[in-house]
Structure formats: structure tokens, C-alpha cells
Amino acid sequence: MQITHGSMIIFKTAKALQAHLLQQKRKTNPVGFVPTMGALHPGHLSLVAASKKDNAVTVCSIFVNPTQFNNHEDFTNYPSTIEKDIELLISVGCDVLFLPSVTEIYPPEHQKKIYPLGRMEELLEGHYRPGHFQGVCEVVDRLLELVDPQVLYLGQKDYQQCMVVAKMIQLTGRQDKVRLEIVPTMREENGLAMSSRNMRLSPEERIHALLISQQLLSIKEHFYKKPLLQLKEEAATNLQRQGFTVDYVEIAEGETLEPADTPQDGQVALIAATIGKVRLIDNMLLDGAVNSSTI
Ligand code: AMP
Image (spheres, rainbow, N blue to C red):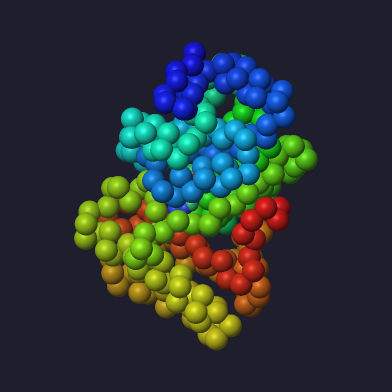
């Protein structure tokens, strides 16, 4: 089934989407793909813009993937603003929206795979959200199979996810078929990283939430000037003083996500902390970390 909304076509089934894309590809048009879970904001739209710049056809998907939520409440509370999302996607000239159901992505014959992600599954988000990265790999693997794009656009906002998906692409032998492009994090003017979860912050929590990007900036400013342990401890203490529960403040190797002992180019500072009921993540590249399609 296909629905045309202005200049954008919406597909709810993979079969109809594939028939359309096959037609497009016959004209040798490269396809760029932006997977999302909806509740779109300018950060998501910057991925669509990046795809539009380099591809003839841009496909965005909205699918709240149940298999990547380790916390059921987080899944059921995930915001949904579909009518507004459609308007936003039309406004930035997205060509195709794929809006599948759960059974479209995971039909009865779907075989669950285990992705051997190694240490990435034990570190940072891997540790705090058991099973999350397997779920991310499962849905991106499946979406890549259905959409078959030349370029996949992911946001640096979810830096660890980018590294995990880069590994999944290698593990599934897709590296010659699809290129991963990492788009820089879009922030509010005051530095807060845009996120669908920000909608759940109270006005007061929203102000406190700024502290996360401020701590990352402070780490970046003092990188090479203070010991890494001190930088991490200072940031964690500052967050805790403002009422955050801190899961981690880490300085890690850009590709492997292993904690760093000494400062070096290619590292990244990462924070996960909860204010009220909302868990926020953010990161900042520290001199020359992986920040585009170098993988
Ligand atoms: P989500 O809907 O949260 O799964 O995000 C879909 C895509 O948008 C992911 O690749 C995210 O990393 C990316 N994204 C989310 N927030 C931002 C942001 N503030 N700036 C850039 N990309 C983002």
C-alpha cells in the first residue's frame, strides 16, 4: 500500500517499498537511508538533509523497535508524534517514508541472529542496557535488507550505536554495499543535544540537562592538561551535585569504546546520566576521533 503526502510517498509494507525503489534504482539513482524511531526534531532532519545532498532518493523510516528496549516502561513511554513527523519530513523534501508494523519487520519466519559484538556489549551502554545493541543490530540489519541503500545515515549523538552498527555491517559482509555516514550532533543554542527524550524533561530538568554538554566541553578543554581520571571524576561530581544519577563519565578509544588510560587523538568523551525519570546520553569527540565515513 502506498500513500502520497505532498511530494513524499509513504509505504507501510516492505514489498511496496521495494517495488518503488527498484524502479528508482533502474534509473541508477543512489538511495540514502535514515532510520529513526520518530518524534522527529531538527537533529533527525539534519540526517535527511545530509542524505538529500548526496543521493537522488532519500528514504526515512519510523519504527519504534521493541527489541532494542531493555526497559519495557521506556518502550511504552516512547513519544509518538506521527502527524507532525510527516509534516516535518515533507518540509525538508524527504522522498519516501517507510512506516512498517512490527510484523512487517519481524514476520513469523524472521530468524533471530546473535551478532558477535565482543567487548562492545560489555562496555558503557552495552553494560547499562543489556541486549540493547543486539536489538539495534537486529533492526538495522533487517532495515538494510529491506531498503538496500547505498548510504546509511546515523547521528553522532548515538556515537556508540554508530560504532556497533559499523561492526554489524562488517560482520554481515555488507561493507561493499553500504557506506556509513556519521552526521554531527545537532544541539540547542545552549548546547543541549537534541533528543526525542528531551520532550519528557520538565522546564527545570531541561535547564539542569545543560550540565551534560557543559561537562563534555570542560573535558575537551582540559584534555591533555589534566589526568583523565581527574577529568572524569570532576564531571561526575558536578553532575551528581545537580541531582543527576550518573551511569558513566568515560573517555574511550573512538573505535573500540575501550576506556582510555592516557590521552590520545581519536578518543571520545561519553556521558550517560539520569535526571528525574529521563536518562540522557551525549558525547564529544576529542581531537580527530572517528567522525564520518572513515569506517
Ligand atoms: P532515534 O529516532 O533516536 O533512534 O534517532 C534516529 C537517528 O537520528 C539516529 O541515527 C540518531 O543518532 C540521530 N539523532 C538523534 N538525535 C540527533 C541529534 N541531536 N543530532 C544528530 N543526529 C541525531
